[in-house]
Image (tube, rainbow, N blue to C red):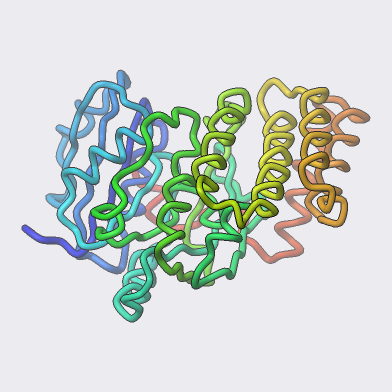
Length: 332
């Protein structure tokens, strides 16, 4: 297969706890014209021995010293052959029709540079939390994207290669896990977006995950916003909203991290309102305020128990399966 339609890029850094299942979710896609590039980003967990056991011929592994997520993705872009590029974090999962439905969209709409889909959150064990992000924005989404990363995570989009040919790769100076948002903003400024309105990606959340590292994220958030609004003085109001929204996001990270920091979460809430007072009208602000109160009142163990029960109720109410229930997950 010299010229596959799609290149799937999987950065992997000490990810063997999840990588076999993640790869299997790619190989079980109903759309088969793809190559897979696993970028071993300086792992020390036996990934090379695992790979040498034999794999589908569409799968290759490229090993390099640790460059971080952005650097690993850029290595994949450099070695890719596909007209469309998909990215998949080593602990996330795809539904079997993910690629087929996104390819159909890009093929039918040549003006679209990126197609995303809905996202279901799962925990360390693959248990669905019951939270599904159902964004419906399409067309010129840049204004919406400055307030919230509607793509949700790096495992979601399928992107035309020409976007990277024109704009370059991921910003490797962004070491704190918001390099994907920066990339989508750059693409959105010049390209239309489309959405497949189905939850085709399972985004794994863990207490120790990179997305919880709020200390490192804060500086990178600010850098992304300043880059996005450079020489765009006519969007100053959107910039204030963006700062408000990212401080709200950081407040959640403080609350949900392994080392919960209530005081810092409350401080970020105050900063969010200072930048964008209209957050008082947003449901998300009051949802966060309620979570802070419950964490303070119930304590760590009580709040954890509350969340477990809440997730059960939410799954029941939404009719979400408790686990990512696809047959290939049971095979090693």
